[in-house]
Length: 476
View 1: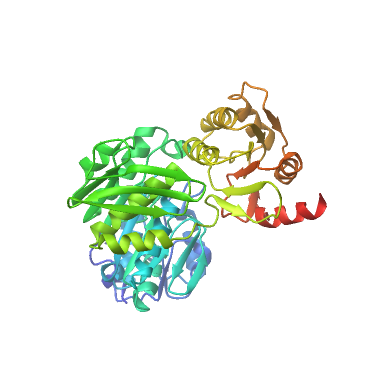
View 2 (view 1 turned 90 degrees about the vertical axis):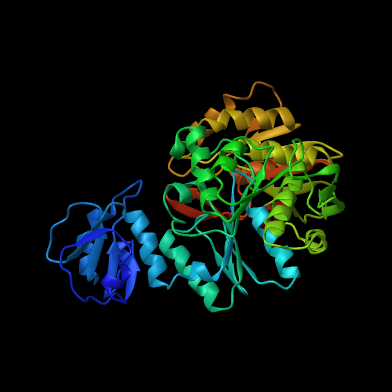
């Protein structure tokens, strides 16, 4: 593909017009190869424009960027290089997004579980559905570990191309607020989009809840239809932004799809919904009120793409729990250990409340907060853990480049009772919880979920809590 063909729909200025063949595209100068176009984008820690010389040395035949750059190379100047990257990616891979029906899920909590539920419902009906999200990307039988919730636009279009090339039909994908704000999904039209909820998170990036909500609401302007949780804050903003058909769902508020006669137990949830004047009973084998919401979101998405109630019922009842989401670890002990990804105030409250609903003994919560992220949620999470748990053990999560003790101090600012203790090393905290646990107690390991590492000073150390639990069982 020539450079002219690649940027034909982008408003730009080209310093040296000519027939230049583009063999590939990269936004990381280290990944540039001979014949590539290098796209310079401004990041949080550095600016791609600083690495133009490196990209040229690595074989770039052209550079695209926003700055006024002079040099002995072909330079494409644009107003917004992030959007241009998305447009170039779509063009380079022959617009694979147009060959797929893409279901987008946004929200603070519930994105991963909802995406997996949708995929399982469709697959059980015999409909191919690939997946992109926090845990992993699934393309047919291939599973790829994810490095972020929503890939950068160029990588996203490459994934779409692989999916389309091997017979993909639907894609269930998590759409983060970062990806919407940073144009990672720019140019993608969604078949349907879901709002799970909006609670506090990522204020280190968005600064205010209003900014955070406005970023999420962008998804509904580029979707043919949508499913909105009416019990969520900012639901009206998302509805206002919607261009397509809006299907609302709820447990508490008036909505088009509402869960009634909700029954919850340690085995899961059962509830009724009404659709087209008929009532249908839904069952999902994942406990907790949040599971009702995740099920409703999945039901509405499937309705929006034309599935029948009976097929949705069959898919839900057979759906399996997700790794790192209220995941019970087999320990052969008189107590139970549950791993959950809860890393926000709302997420932590949801998981502890869900467990409390069926716990026969004490609830022991082991948790921490991530470093270099929104610090204002730390005391909130401390207060929630202390209030809802019988015993709260404060420890490290992913401290990243912060001092773990400083993070713990922030958490303790929200804790006023005497039912908590501090064990700063996470492995030691898990061991302490297992040593004090009695018959019928439930230990919640919150925050890590599917992650198999602990990030400290830019280094990811092996830390799979399932492995850690087995090691501790051999010690005690």
